[in-house]
Length: 336
Image 1 (cartoon, rainbow, N blue to C red):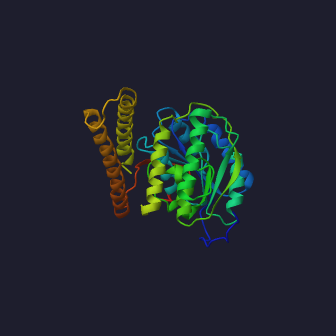
Image 2 (image 1 turned 120 degrees about the vertical axis):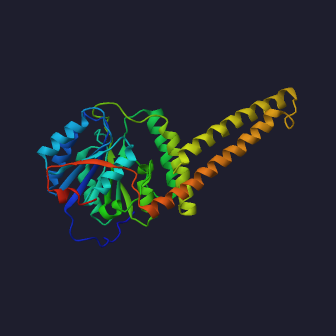
Image 3 (image 1 turned 30 degrees about the vertical axis):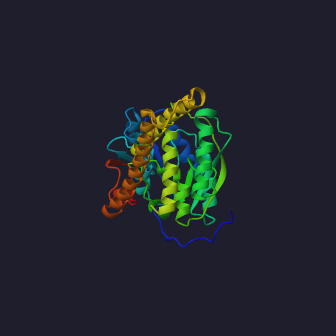
């Protein structure tokens, strides 16, 4: 995709680059992440802030963030009142940022800090978002890579956004990032959301080393949530506008049970000549199909109502308990 003309942006920002990183029980990674990220940014010679969002950690992550922030005025710790999930932690970090460019990345060092300068150089060409496209991923083929390939294909087909790797390392123009209204799970859709607003997006290849330490917080259950994210993305793009997880899961279970019953009835019909139409299981399966459709429809309708309420009330999906920093108080709150 050719670079667009640079858009007009405010001439002054407190810092050039804001790094936003959610941290949940990452005591083994946080020091190394801060060391390498600081070295990469100092090497570029840019003013910066590193925003570590403590998402209700129960290990020593909060204490380490306090210690690091006392020694480094460029580090800001945003402590959420309780664990709210990766997307909400990212949203909180973005809303407390004040950089010309906002970089969103994980804290387990699977997004190498040394590759952030490449994204920043690329976005300076005039893009609204530059995405890191992970190469030679070393994660589980069945649990991570294959579901990721399928999900990314479906998201490209749904959004028409030609980004091959929607999740992970991203660099976004500051005012675009702070203008996003993210809800739970939508961190996986950020490139598509920026693109749907008319933003110019591109991607650059990045490496994908294994996690530095600790255990992954992802499980196979996330793939189900991604499926509903894709359904919502299609719905939003079609109708131009989230309880959908609950109703969607119920709908999926009802649909699956009804399908098993129908397969059993078909088996009896084909091999034993049993009549289907008047049997109670057939009527029950039809009722389950209709219930499944009703639950999914209810979830989508409630999504529209919740989005409307959020837009009118301006409510935030998180509560910040504390801001930890050793820099000037006004500067620490510049993005809030």
